[in-house]
Image 1 (tube, rainbow, N blue to C red):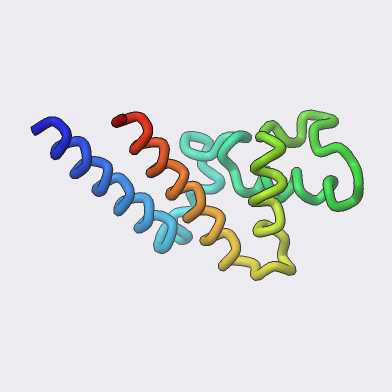
Image 2 (tube, helix red, strand yellow):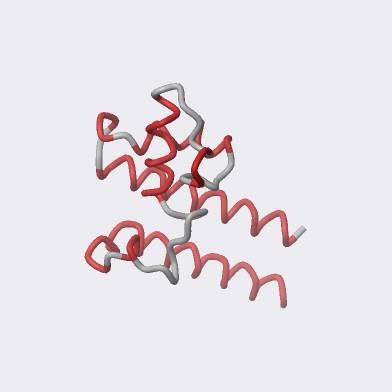
Length: 108
C-alpha cells in the first residue's frame, strides 16, 4: 500500500512540475529566491556557460556554483542561439527527468 501511495505522489509531483515548466512563465519563478538558488537557476547556468565559451573559468569570482557536468551538458541549451525560450523548456524537462530518476532510485 505504501508503494502505491509513493508512486501516486511521485506522479502528482511530476505533473505539477510539468505544469510549472510549461505555464509558469507568467509567475516569474526564476526571479524568486525561494525557488531559484545559484545551484538551480537556469540564469546562473547561462552566466556560467558564457565564460566557458570564451575559454575562461566560470568558477572564478563565484559566478557559477554548479557541477561541471551540468555546465557541459545543459550549458549549450541556455545560449540564445540554440533556441531561446524552447531551450529553457528542454533544460527544465531534463531537470524533471533527473528528479524522477532520483525518486525511482530512492524507492529501491
